[in-house]
Length: 108
Image 1 (cartoon, rainbow, N blue to C red):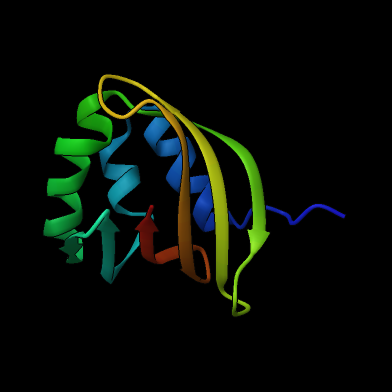
Image 2: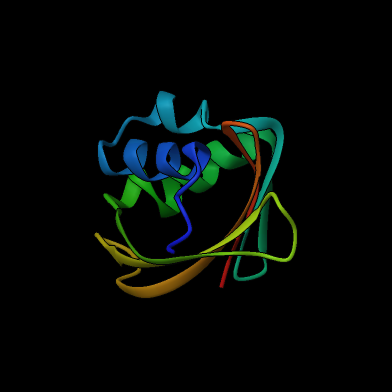
């Protein structure tokens, strides 16, 4: 049986694809972090900077290829097909969710 996609991850994807910056930022906890290939961004301000430079600011679009449970109940490893004016290709994103919000994201 496939792993269902948590609401927090669906919000991350849907708000990115809709270029909804306010909704995108609202999909993270206040103390969330993003590690994008070793570049780290913390809190709402840091995530807003990453969003502008690497995500909605680049018109990114995400399509889930595969989702798997991670090493804990709140961790999910998502393989995505990414398109836009920045990175294009298949990538892996490891999310830690806190209810309906993203607590951390590691992009490899």
